[in-house]
Length: 344
Image (cartoon, rainbow, N blue to C red; front, side, top):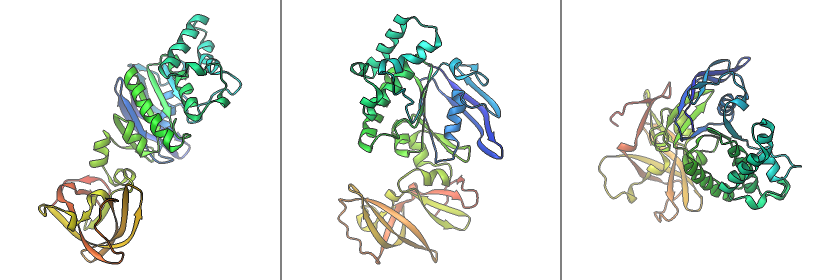
């Protein structure tokens, strides 16, 4: 286990600032998730930490050692990629053993023990003689993780390792991955564009956009106390609603915006007339799309409610909807940055 630090790290590809001054400190044993859309810089940042890219500027430290100019093999890291990068002509045993043999630092017996230890952790000892084509997606993922673990690295880097799995298997793989990381206590950095993975796995989440870090915090912090409008809209399905009032954007989550007829107490509420457009059923939940009529303006808004909620909403009709004032968030309409609460 080791602390990982990036100090004002930058990576420019000609005029493109893929990573633009990122400073982070990942604590020993922490599970940190780097989250962002395509082109946000998250994978480039991971590759910089891994040593697969050379920074334009800045420093990278692992366990207090400056590794900025060191190759990957000298960084004491394990990596798992989206493709898993397994050799199709090798058995599972040989796939896991290959980097250990290539290092030349372990005897045949030490390699065997390392493979058995790593596969034992992930319960795939029975697969050692199979080839990758004989494995399911979940089994391939475990082989890739075992290969990374067999090196007994201080840091584990995971670049979208669950994206090739179907939805059901991805959910169980998240659970397995989190339990295994907790058991080993290994410092882990996980890159994803999937907010469900980020919210479910991370001790902390780093939200990136345009090569910059927009916010770092616990899943609860980045969701409920988003630092700016980008984070507020990127997290959540759907993202945060906004109503413009002069120089402010007043934000609230779809699940916080409910019909007045379903509210038990009318204290400390902001009430808004909501014209229902259509209702979309999602199984356990339903989304109500419509417009809020506020200060002479119509704004598209979404409400999220339980599908078991029996209050009938007729498309085209206007209803009073409410949100608790303590749930309102305020942002500067020009910069998008979070500002102090104001009276509404």
